[in-house]
Image (tube, rainbow over all chains, first blue to last red; front, side, top):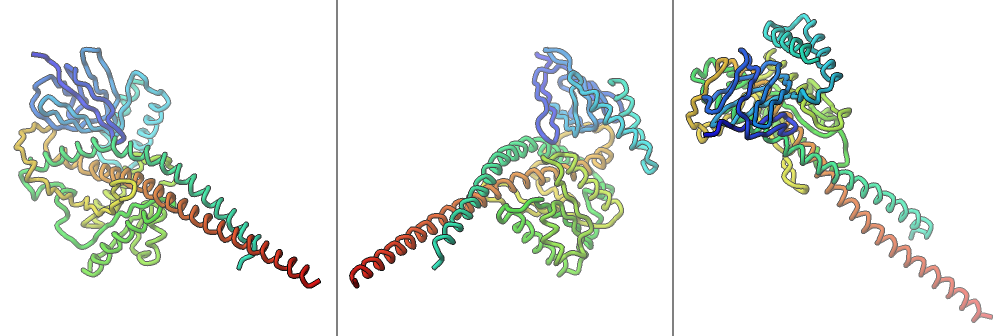
Length: 130
Length: 291
């Protein structure tokens, strides 16, 4: 039996990526990273800013996501996200831009703890890749 | 009868108008293709989003504790209408159709004695509504600067809507836009986004056992605001495709009408030229005869 399943990443503008030979996907779920292998139980979860790692026969790919929802069902993984960037061809300027706006956001007084947590996460990830 | 010179001037002015409408038609056709493409590409996202929300809301056992965005505030007093129109004119009945649809709804709301609040997206809608419903318009948004429809614009509108909902400024929210069917047909739509209508609940309840992390209601309360933006984004995409389609057929009509007008004027011009020549001949001949 093969160990592969299919993954599709969509953002509002288009279907970003579709693969059907992945063996494992690691996603930054809200309560910690989840690695998803074939025949995982159906799951719905949402993401915090972080790195999605996709392992497939053809190698490993990493993406930065701002947020998102994942749904895994019948060996199909769907990832919905509003902003996704491939780490391979990432634009340093773009990252700095996001980082800056996140920092500004963080300095606002009226954010709640959850937002602060998400922003902290975001900055941490951004710093690590920049 | 107009003089020859006048006719000549008119013909050339109609011809240059035709040139403009023809160019606009071409531009609209090119833009339409792009708009249609992005509308199609955007579909998987909103479809998937809908699916997940359906699955989630099926999993919610306790309706009373469901997030307010899903179940509503329990009241039906204040209606917020987001009317989405274009920023540019010359697109046939595009804006008028949306406004017509929206006005019907407004009238119904006001007749029932409920409060009406309006957010207009796009300047044309504001222009058409400000006279009758100027007092009801609480916000006007325009994305004149953004070249293409993008998610962040939609997100901005979504955030405004949610912020107002959190402040309990309204109970029900509906959006108005044109759904793109084909180049000739665009159907004005009214869609209720708060509380969310889950009419397909029955047919889709395939008893999936999902694992949720974190809990269902926490996911839902995170997802629903996103869904609002997604729905608005979808409406914006449909709207932009509709706008270009509508403009294209309007400009096509205008070009054809201008062509007809040029033909008519040319015939009239030729006739009066002929008449002038005949008249001159008669004058010369009768002058010669009298000698």
